Image (cartoon, rainbow over all chains, first blue to last red; front, side, top):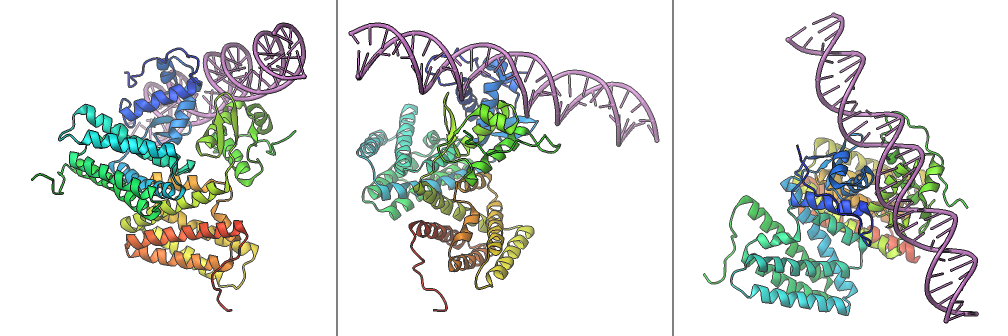
Length: 243
Length: 243
DNA sequence: GAGGCGTCAAATGTATACATTTATCGTTGA
DNA sequence: TCAACGATAAATGTATACATTTGACGCCTC
């Protein structure tokens, strides 16, 4: 039985760092996309044969992914895909709310570079344009997902704190928790959150650290709320414009 | 030149998991204690000779420690001890303040087990006894450090959130940032923070999530403030009893 | 003399052989 | 019949040989 659906790794192109890193990226993608189901065992030999490399880079990759929290490891018993409870995914948003609000505060306290300001303003403008339409198609939702990512990522960098960035990344590397998933939420929710972006940027520009923190915290928490609502199947309880 | 001061690993006792894990612990301790200075290169062959194992477990250990953030890694160029700026250590306390305040909130929302209540009450009582004395000797400061650790660790567990626990551990595995270091601070600061512990526990018992969060945030932030004050060489600006 | 190129040594990256642990399955005994 | 023991196969853990990359040194050229 083939519980693994990975194609062999292409021969080492120059400029492709190391096999270990390539294999890591490959397996991570397979886990995050769901190709490798939760609980699935990851046999070193099988993976190495499938990917066309030796066990060494595979072991290295598995270890990396385990310390990212994506895999479980038991000594002498190998690695398996970590099973995330719904509560863990929701909690990850609570953690992100704390971390990203701190990032926003740091960004407000420490200031943005000219380039960061330009990047954010571009992201805000593009978001305005995308959301001007009444309904969003698949393409636009993907485009907005990218814009959303740029906004948050720029603020993480502006926090000038590597540990904070690393931790936010840990929060994001949880199945079903990727930034792209905001696209699957209610259109009005997306608009409200885009408004949040404008306000957060204002606060950071004005060096209003307290307000930046609070706005970002509420912003991420609202994503959590949308997620919980979506999971429980209930519609948005808030009034919608145009009724 | 011997930039490494590690004794050979004793022969594999049964029950000692794997060599990789032993080596990881050994090197981590050397880094955190300062035996391996920031910036020092960690040569695989030299380490394996020093520790009396092959390169394989050494490589595994280095990779683990790099993903913990203790080492730097550059492909094809090996590992070196990460250099932490003072600002990074201070920032780590800001992050901990956010994470631990969330942990306190979760603990208040989700409740403590009987055992956890007992553990915390014991820690509080022991702390009361230790701090009853006017001045603290070396022994008592170590003892209070242990009590302090138990208090915080129990709350992290009570948060019932593995990711949160992992991240707090990441914050703690920063040189000079260990819990034990609170012992080096002003005696009155320690007393005030022990009072904080009592109030935080009250809030958690009463399921007052908001208050638990705020108290814990301020509690950890005050450690940061003490650290900054100690680093800048200024004495405590607050009024002291008995003057 | 300065800059660039090529060689070489030493480090890391990879593959593979060997050691040890684990889990399964069959047998044996009560 | 069931439980416990033991053998066996397959997995992971470790060691080591080989491959590749890197950086330094020295030489040659301009």
